[in-house]
Structure formats: structure tokens, C-alpha cells
Length: 158
Image 1 (spheres, helix red, strand yellow):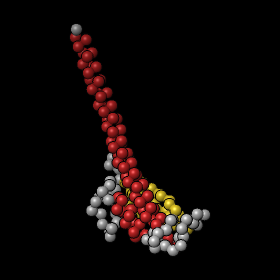
Image 2 (cartoon, rainbow, N blue to C red):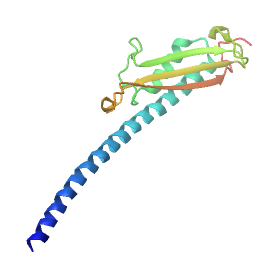
Image 3 (cartoon, rainbow, N blue to C red):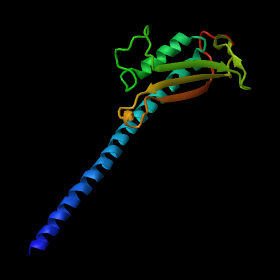
Image 4 (cartoon, helix red, strand yellow):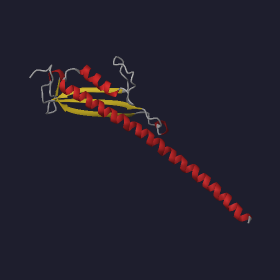
């Protein structure tokens, strides 16, 4: 009877060690899923912002300040920007690039782009993962690029 009692104590100790080891793996996987979910939320917000900027730029391609404001307004209240963001002091992690090009790929100044050509709006953000320090990851660049045809607006000529 004593041998049976010792065997169950050993089994309990073994089960405790196995549980502790498996919980560490499960915890790391859970934290990774949380970080991935937050990064995915950033990507969705950046996609929406680049589309908003390109949509505005397709009407008024020469107004880069207004396009930037449209991008920032789209990002307000999201994971990327707090709602009290000020246009005068841009977030250092937020990168906005506005470029125009002809259909053949040659660049053109956005204030000179004719109807039918393209505007390209790229919005990027340097995401710092919450638990990336465990793996040595300090930041992950997330970008979204939208290309739209310039359809012109009231301020553009024929």
C-alpha cells in the first residue's frame, strides 16, 4: 500500500510540472495573439486612412495639406491616433507620403496632374509590439498604399 501511495505522489508532481510547462507555452501563444490582433487593427485603420486620403486627393490632388488632414481625421479615435491629435504636431510614428504619377509610371507634380492620371497615398506607422521585447522586436512598420485615378474637382481645369 505504501508503494501505491508513493506512485500517486510522483504522478501528481509530474502532472504539476507538465502543467507549469504547458501553461508557459499557452501564455506565450496568447500574448502573441493579442499583439497580432492589435497590429491587425492598426493595419485596418491605416487601410481606411489611405483610402480616405486617396479619395480626397482624386478630387483635389494638389492640396496635399488637405489630403493629410483627411488622413489624420480618418485615424482620429482609432488605435493609431488618440482623438486629441493636433495637425500642427504630427505623430513621429505616422508617415504619410502623397505622390502623383502618370499611367506609364513617370512621376508628376500633384498640382499639375491631369484627369485620368494616378494619385498614390501611402500611410505608414511604426508599431511597437506590447510583448516584442521577449523576442527582441522593438518596432514593426505597418504600411498601406492606395492608388486612385484623378477625376478632378471644382478647382481643377478641364
